[in-house]
Length: 398
Ligand SMILES: [Zn+2]
Image 1 (cartoon, protein in one colour):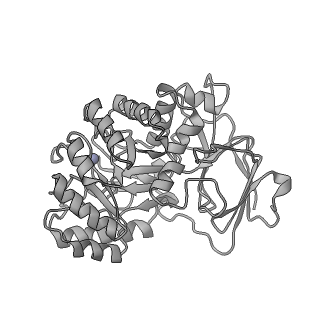
Image 2 (image 1 turned 90 degrees about the vertical axis):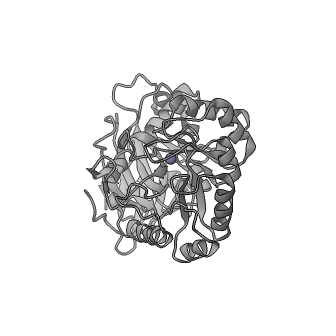
Image 3 (image 1 turned 60 degrees about the vertical axis):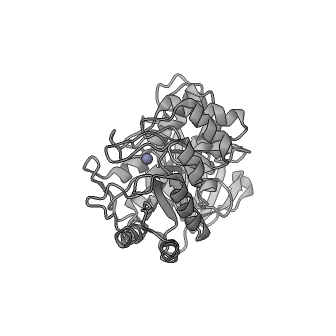
């Protein structure tokens, strides 16, 4: 486990050149006409043709060797607990494994697997503040983990949300995983959270594990959270007519997860597309879960939606990058000057029948990952989890 992720010391300048395909992460222009990216001190400072950008005095030069550069993938729905350990399946190193699946940012939907999780208000607040601090300090492999997501309980009052926000808490965990399971109470507390700048999500669908419960469309729509957490269910999804009602009944984020019902994910995708609302669709894994952890889960969602949902691969990648970044107000997820230099460098997997990487994803294959970069620092080279890429980038100079 790479618990001691390298941090930038002093000024740094990263140049990635010889990019074959540059995916922006932004749906309005998913492919950029550029072969070079420059990042200084962790932020993107230039995107263009090699001859047109200033690559002098680079501290790290990566030759992409004609491969594909995309924003680092964002997992909109994880359940971290402590460091790189999850008690759910008693695994260590799961976050580092996700980095090898191209994930550079994770959003906690609640640290609900904590053994002995407190349910009293003081305990709920203390655990959220602790998780926010601890995951911001310790970044396994360099992965950015936005955690500290308390799950609301009936005894909470407005001042609790004010206090949480003042302490740096920016997220609510899934509404419905605590004592609050009714629409009116959820709506009141989600409103308090929003008033103090705390973003919210909700458990949608049937219970995922013993102890969680059913949250149907009426509760989801009344609660009015910022993100409709796993609209395709925590394995048990709502009926299609309820999913359609939610899509049509609000303008909130529509989150599709790997540990959900795949048919319902495709139904949601079709519904959102018919409505011209694809920018609302974001991706997560909802791991660790009853079905384990899935280091390639976000890539698998991209491939699933692209191949079975008939979505151009360059758009499918936006659901895992730019859409989530915009919905979650993150400074990563899009290849744009000023944003974080978080990248995944990929190529078509060896022996895929595709004509190129995008075609291979549209055929349902996963791409190979050759490198991940976070804050302008190379974190991993050839992935230990993805299929081997046909071509891989290399570090050619410091
Ligand atoms: Zn859930």
